[in-house]
Amino acid sequence: MNYTSHATAIIDEGATIGEDSRIWHFVHVCSGAKIGARCSLGQNVFIANKVVIGDNVKIQNNVSVYDNVTLEDDVFCGPSMVFTNVYNPRSSVSRKDEYRDTYVKKGATLGANCTIVCGATIGEYAFVGAGAVIKGDVKPYALMVGVPARHIGWISQQGERIPLPLRGEGTFLCPHTALRYKLNGEDMECLDL
Ligand SMILES: CC(C)(COP(=O)(O)OP(=O)(O)OC[C@H]1O[C@@H](n2cnc3c(N)ncnc32)[C@H](O)[C@@H]1OP(=O)(O)O)[C@@H](O)C(=O)NCCC(=O)NCCS
Image (cartoon, rainbow, N blue to C red):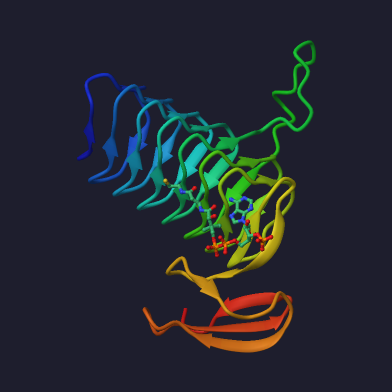
């Protein structure tokens, strides 16, 4: 496997890591983890066994990706953001067979210090603001901020606001990418994918 890792990183035998991925100081990757190509794992990142990570995923410092978390291609995890996998933990009750899945779809951004309560699917290119707490599914291209997170708008693949209301009908042409977006009722879609 053709990736680079710092001498302090611990990569357990059996982990798969794709071409040109970069693994920085004090990272631990468990044996069952599957990590794609061109990923970056920042300082002090932990990747558990039952984790699948696509290509070109960026995970900033101090993020733990626990069992039952799936990150699709081009996902960005901001520094110190938090995944979970037990919904109602108690130290005295074993819940290892009750993990709830978290899916983060292609291109989504999870801002610094946000928390994803397990059992949620974060839609394609959704954007979770810094410090938000997500509980439940997030629509593609939705911008979510606050605690609990609320849907305040739409955001393009470029990472800029789409000037359309939360619901209704409308279209937007991104001046940077020429991608066309269409609001259908309460859902945003990109017409060019
Ligand atoms: C969401 C974000 C991109 C700002 O987007 P924006 O379109 O410029 O939004 P605005 O700053 O115009 O804010 C719109 C509203 O949302 C609120 N808001 C924006 N970001 C917020 C956040 N993270 N948490 C809570 N409220 C937030 C603003 O206060 C404002 O509220 P108001 O309408 O009541 O005044 C930015 O605030 C953010 O969180 N970026 C993530 C940064 C990060 O984590 N980077 C990691 C790599 S270092």
